[in-house]
Image (cartoon, rainbow, N blue to C red):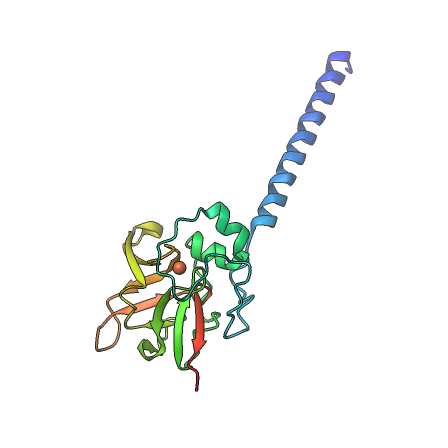
Amino acid sequence: MITESNIRFSKFTSMKKLFFFILINSFLLQCAQKKVDLTKPQQQTKMEDNTHTNNPYYSRTDKTKLNVSNEEWKKILSPEVYAIAREANTEYPFTGKYNDFDEVGEYYCAVCGNHLFRSSSKFASTCGWPSFFEADKDGVIYKRDSTHGMERIEVLCKRCESHLGHVFNDGPPPTGTRYCMNSVSLDFQRDKK
Ligand code: FE
């Protein structure tokens, strides 16, 4: 039997459904906007990208420690660099611009320009990320990382504390160390001839 209270109840249920529909849609839209597809090497086609005109903190010579908020970095960095360097995401293996790369030169932090590695310490690793057996001692710092159910040592830029990757003790001689890095966090400068 259709009564007035049944109609009211039915209208209320429809309104509730509509409300949740709008809520879920706006949530999904937000997620889609924020999502960065790290499986594709976007912006990784250029081997040397030394244009940092929008980044006032970038310097290859200034060693002064930076204290810049992620809110500020988000305005400066590309979504890919921000996601990996500031939110400790990992680029998809075998996609990074420096994974299969053996040019001679220096590697700098893509966020702040701090010197991190020399190409002579890079080795052909099969792990899918650019790997080095030695880092610039003034370039990196280390932090314990217990995320994802693993015990690892995270490697960060000493100047800006951006995430670079992790370090493992299964590297080649002479150090036996493997710095497993994200290409996105690195900038390469080829030696001048
Ligand atoms: Fe840095």
